[in-house]
Length: 66
Image (cartoon, rainbow, N blue to C red; front, side, top):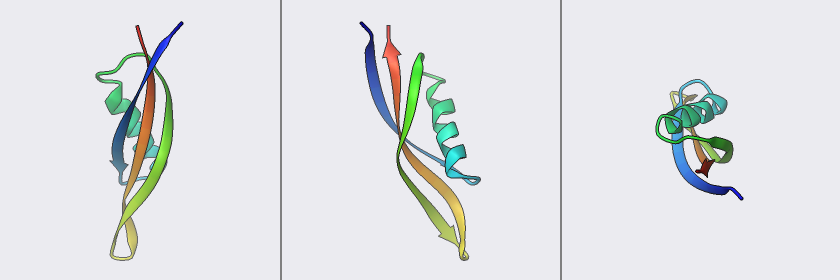
């Protein structure tokens, strides 16, 4: 039987929501091993001069505890 844990992270990117999610996984993988999945639970963006300035995601990352 495996034991799984979930952590919640906020991440951002000036490129896209997909890139923000990739940034979250990359940052989490620096200190968390055995990442199994990522769930994007919320997306938002900031706007500057009528254009999207920063993409933001709230993600839940699931990993296996050994």
